[in-house]
Image (cartoon, rainbow, N blue to C red; front, side, top):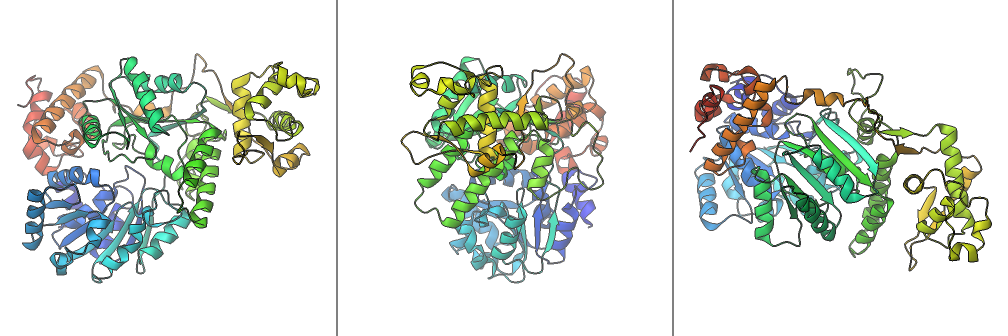
Length: 615
């Protein structure tokens, strides 16, 4: 059977997404390959379809233990004989997995790297192994954002099966990380398949953080009743924000490593199963969630790298429908990341250098008044727009800069404003903190300022008209651009001008400064939002709601997450085309023969207007 025929029969799609076919063909030909596709780009199909072809066993190494059971359930919905082996598996199911392997029934096996390296399944894999897929392959690299030492040992296991093709997959890899993956996983004359990192259905926003709770609430309230994730930097931040959102009547729960295992499991389970709208989680504590219809992700604190941001924000809109990603930036977040890293006594010089570059890059992304889609694409070494893609003159139409919500100061005004701030820092000789210099620029009198004679300086009150939020934001932007620095080796953090800052004061160097602007009454709407709900009319929207309720009931009955039954994008298609027969339903993207046979009658009843839910 041809790959397209398997795709249609098992998954209900007529065509592959970019580079999926090439990856599958490499696997069929026994060739190694590196696959870099953005979240939602369909990486899992690259190894699931070869498993469905019946040529042998496909092994998937993944660090996301919390996701494995859902991934197995989704694979089984497509008719695959899939299993998982990990530390959370109880004795009974574990025996069943071993029995399936021994009998040669397993087509797709998920394992954690630690579980594979234990070595006890090597003999069971035997000659049947045709493909070893390493998911989240960036974990092998020191330059990646989630380095895991055990990933460096995977070649020990892979080398035991020289006939099996190797496939490394990741959503986030700079050119340096790609090179590391190729070498560390021993890929042999590999096919290198690099998809464009841009996610056109995502609306990116990055603003200075001024009132965290208020700004988070504004973002959450734009999506009533929809699923969203709020990321915060510390457990304390998570608890505080979750409590505030609950006070506002939002369906919300905290999620971090300090909570009991049962509480974490319940929060994750309720969110994935759509009984909970909002999860507030720590950036550091990875969430094993795979809910496809997350409509927004808010970073209440700055993540540690652009790679982290791409992956965490990428949990929004995995179904291809529009979603919003908002980042609230403060330079103090970068200092906190640096401090937390220094607590790690095992931080090598190489990792230290990598961390500094990562902090600088995410800071520049957050404060530069430049199209966010363009910044993200260029970070991963790709042009924007992608080759052959058209871009409107007004920009991407799906970020705060191109929508006119953030504006850059004209070049000369930016330079003059920067010089005023830098001059104030220079006059203070690096002996005072950020707050003191802000008060100086705003012309706020005080005993310390008067005692130091700083109220007599020319810079005293020189930015009074700009206001505190603007001055603090510009100061953060100058820190990110290396014109100012905050010392960390003093009892109190002190603000100092750098050599680059002194050079800028002498008109050597370039500077960019931007600010959020108040939305105009005739504010442009994000073009991506026009995609929302496809072409559904009012009746279609109502039917979509009914179909979601049916899917939820089916998922509860089967004990799986709703997205395992089908994605929102499939429900949108059902609501738009309203098929009346099982045969017609086969033409809907994402259904496939097994889903139509198993669930078709329930969805057809909903389309026909029958109100009863599956029992």
